[in-house]
Image 1 (cartoon, one colour):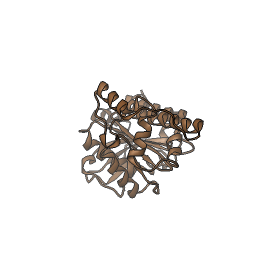
Image 2: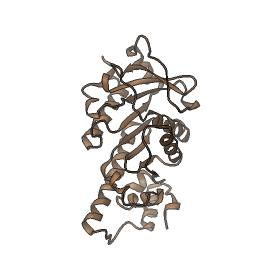
Image 3: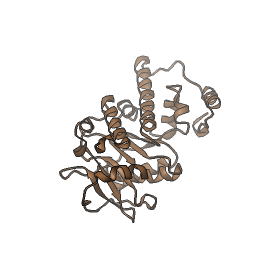
Image 4: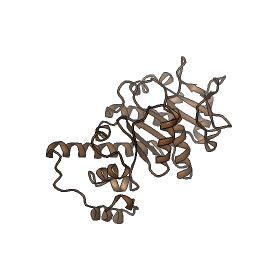
Length: 275
């Protein structure tokens, strides 16, 4: 048995490959992190390095993630290489007792480092752990093509994007009834975008980064990937409708229809986004 046969590692690798096959990870674009359970850590520990590597300050801090372990993609690494070459493309990091530094305990071989977006992931793991009572464990960032395209034409507001997505595919009000958050364009990889996104993720499962991509959370790989897939599919429909109709939309899912969906499926829609 190898570490790549352990369920959490297999699931991580599969999600990376699924994202690559969708076309959301050109070159080294996108990143994925998973907050491991105690059982995951115990299963993987026999494969950890005999001597952990040095501690590295993140520039952000979270008490509720002290001592946690994360699987992460690597900085500058390609999603298309995670499956054939996991030891160079991904790794496991441990968080220190202060909740402000990481060290590599497996993988990320030959000097590789965790994704440059790790501070954003870390702060959003902290927020989503608190918001969901510990249930959320996956944070995923991808360059979803149609979502990015919409950030050039829609107002960069939570309301505008939530309504456009809800009205473009019937399942959307059920999958993300709270809506989606939207962040203006910011330089990626630093503390500023990490903090801005974490503010959105206090309310939403997903945030859109203008001219950059999509940032989602979930309790497991299937749910997180499914959320990203649903949002991107809805954005694709909206883009096609605008393209076919020259910007004219003749009919859509009206607000009372959205309320009917919420009633029948037992979810609570964000009424702030309804007329």
